[in-house]
Length: 284
Image: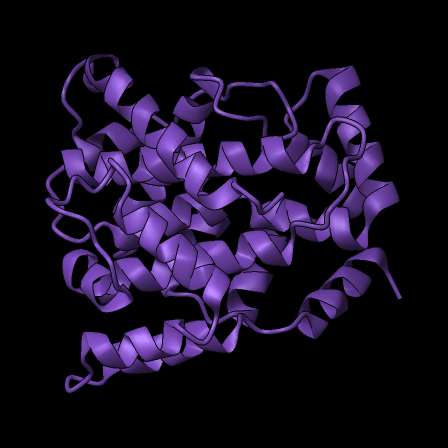
């Protein structure tokens, strides 16, 4: 069995996302579902329920008054936002036991991933999209495939990290050399396994390219730029220090205002620090 085959087999054997996520998905598809119905599902996992309440009461959402119950949080934030928070919390927990290896620290990895999530959501808001919940989750999960390598091909991945550092090349190029696949492919496999939304799967697969001829082009382009910005602003560490050149076609797709990041960096960093606290506190 080749290394690629072994990795693919391991991905297929991974557990599905927790029942709480699947149950929320089903509720969202039911037009008669109420916030109380969803609150009952979330209440089955006390740790997740606590984090949802903490998130709802954070400065990021700017809600007036204190949110005391899960059903209130759902009313204020919406089903999709709550569902994506549950997914993010679940996935961080699932991989929290990854130990440090050379040039790869899980805390720094998640800090980078959260930075990309915050940046992606910011871009979606700036370009005037009404629903940006999937943007946030797509950003957080864009490098998910790296965790597969750390979990199931640790020695080979240590070698890929070493090559990337010594030769000063992008990590994904070193991954291809050592593993035969890169993290975008591995991440796509896992997103299939977990039945994540198609927009998130496409963002995971194509975020380094930046554009594609598809209805999900905007979210792919947003994650592409967000990933570069997160590196520029030193939000965590993704496994290599290279800041890639953007695909300039994304500017045609996104049409962002001039100096939009410079003008908003203080609020972006505040949102980033809040979200890191929400998702990483007591997790890693």
